[in-house]
Length: 298
Image (cartoon, rainbow, N blue to C red; front, side, top):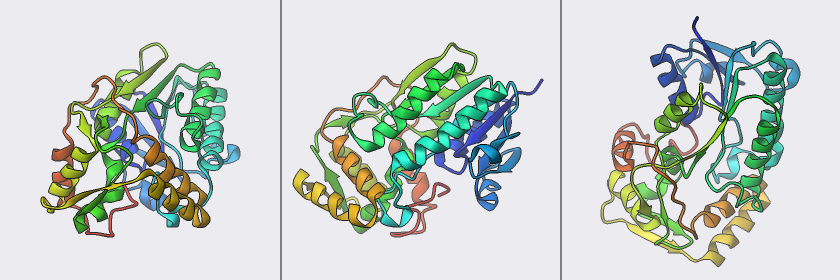
């Protein structure tokens, strides 16, 4: 019997990658989301439109389904992406999805959080994710919590700076991280489906300093002589506080960028794909300095 995976957050980079890999492994995929036109670009076997309220989710999940959630507010620091805080968006949406999955008798619930999330709970972005994690663990459903150090596609939000030849580097330029390709996250999720409940720290095969990551972005954007511009913490926080006035969520995200840039954010290797290869491919698809900053499809 063909097993079904319900994907919430299907139009994001990890959701799209999961659909692609799951179909390749013989799963039936169902994309959940608000925008039918965007959902239909994801390649899922079926699209179900919902606003993620309990009433609209009824019937969307059946007994035995596997539910995957990369659902939440955008990680973009742009004030044009919305003003509601991460707790106001991520927690109610995922809680409604989890409650329906629990009542329906789903086989498993998988959720994308972040590495070092529990240690960083004093910060709004991490706390919203970890509140969802707490509820998933308490639900009684078998679960997988995916904890990437960083996702390749996240850096596209700074692509415009790379194209201009000046790439901002907050925090400490020499702290290290090993970000991971979204397809490697999706593969880890699929591999965990028949395993006991687990939390997976997921890192890529390469460890970079923040300065080295900036140099990768500059090279792939066609600016090999560009500048990795260090931003002192006080200046970064000033920008975050000013941005808060237009969008509290964007202010939260900008502050979190600084938080994760002051300590080594390295976990065991789970991925295989390289950051520079990824952006060399993406550079051919990017519409330029402004385009591609907010959408996952490029």
